[in-house]
Image 1 (cartoon, rainbow, N blue to C red):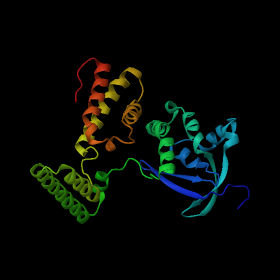
Image 2: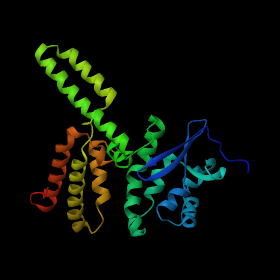
Image 3: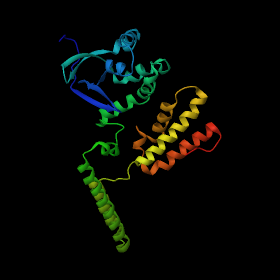
Image 4: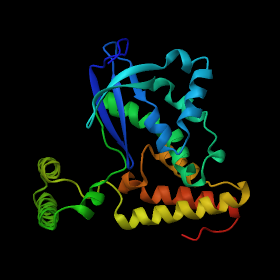
Amino acid sequence: MATGALIPIEQKTILFYEDEITAVRMRDGAVYVPIKPIIERLGLNWSGQRSRLQRDPILNVEQRMCVIHTPRRGPQETLCIPLDYLSGFLFGINADRVNPEYREDVIRYQRECYKVLSEALTEGRLITDITFDDLLQTADPGAVQAYQIAQAVVRLARNQILLESRLSGRIDDHEGRLITLESQLGDTGRNVTPDQASQLSQAVKAVAIELGKKSGRNEFGAIYGELYRKFGITSYKMLPARRFDEAMKFLTDWHETITGAAGPF
């Protein structure tokens, strides 16, 4: 292996929707991201984008060869750019000029990729856009049944504790027991249900279609991006259940503003 490549002290693979993105941290704290896999994932020509990197007066100076450990080939020297410059590179891609099948992916990367990677590397959160309901769809049936039984026990225990609190008046004590129980077995009401998630998706679709009629563009990425920004989430499936009505009103009002008519949802 040639000398001169940066050797990281930490390497992480972050799940971004269905994609895996590698990032590495150097001894000085700088974080770099291999750029070729991202370019190829977005259906772009590597040679052309490499030339763009070299022409850019900032990215050309900041790009580095880094040692990345790969499962099949071991340590490999790979062209990387600093995480802080990733958004700048992505926003240099004209989404309207890429292959239509990759257009929404490009917009999603432009809107969310930097934020997700940054949070994963600073807060230790390695997974985005995956909920427990998603996992239940592919989990072992026996494990799913055990989980459902446990949740039934939680609901029964919750009701019993609340009943006892009303009868005895020892609200603080029972509230503490309730919090402990839910922390051990999980709070099923934390995020929206699959049915609510479906309603959100349909509402986004309705707004995106109406807005697209006016703009002439695919607006799905923009609508999802605004929803995520407003509610501080990275997936509509991760919306807190207590904010479902607020989110639906937000989308309904948006639809009415565009069409001048009551929303279809």
